[in-house]
Length: 178
Image 1 (spheres, one colour):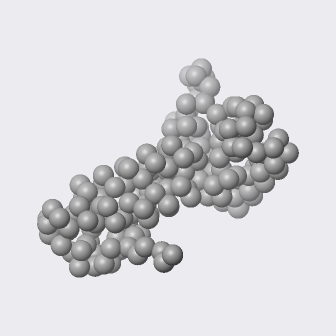
Image 2 (image 1 turned 60 degrees about the horizontal axis):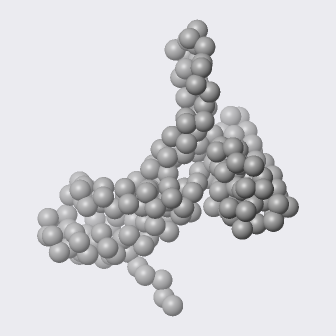
Image 3 (image 1 turned 180 degrees about the vertical axis):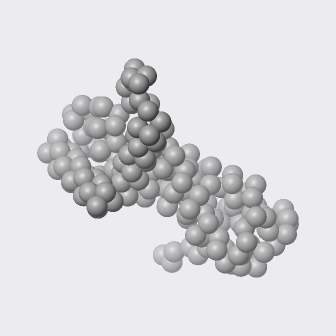
């Protein structure tokens, strides 16, 4: 089966001009591409669906602000990427210790936020199968058995993916630090 293509430039231009039918056609024809990209970037299927929906809403609301009608795909991918990173950061923040020392300086606070951002970006860069295992096990804190069961894997397969994910994150963090 041939892969569906992104909407053509004429449809984008008509949507930018405010044509309601074109906007509707643009949103519906872009959604499968946006969902596929979100599934490859977000940590969980739920986050992927939410990110795809958010991207389509932004497309609907802000199509008039798109400067180059031929840049629809890259614009949508940036929106999805940013939404997935935002969701990863929220997930990491939910699992940070509640009681933090009040003596942390502004500089330490900025460095901490930058580190959290680096980790979130490294996790987002993982292949989907590794990212899911890592997020469920290390971020959300589920037991190895629960993660394996949730993903339909043997414990050995889950441990192997988790090891590859941790190694990849470590390597990505080392690269960006050096």
